[in-house]
Length: 116
Image (cartoon, rainbow, N blue to C red; front, side, top):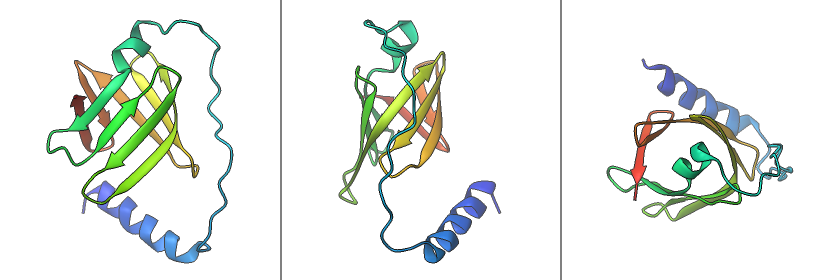
């Protein structure tokens, strides 16, 4: 069993234990107040999609992101920060993810994204 399947199963188990209504907490990513994005930020800004088009991510210059799963009708928003080739994501409900940008491919977990 792959580690991602184990983590997914644990997440489903934990969601059954958690209260049905979760409060939204403030985002914790701390941004430097730079006026212009650096080269790493500029490489990350834009729209990204998986090869099959099932997930779309819009990384905006102001540090906000919008994630959409058109087939499921799901949308998420949050903030992201860039540290060289690493991207740190934090959603509106508090989930966090680490992305890596390498040779025009954005990897978040097992998902691979290319610029749209």
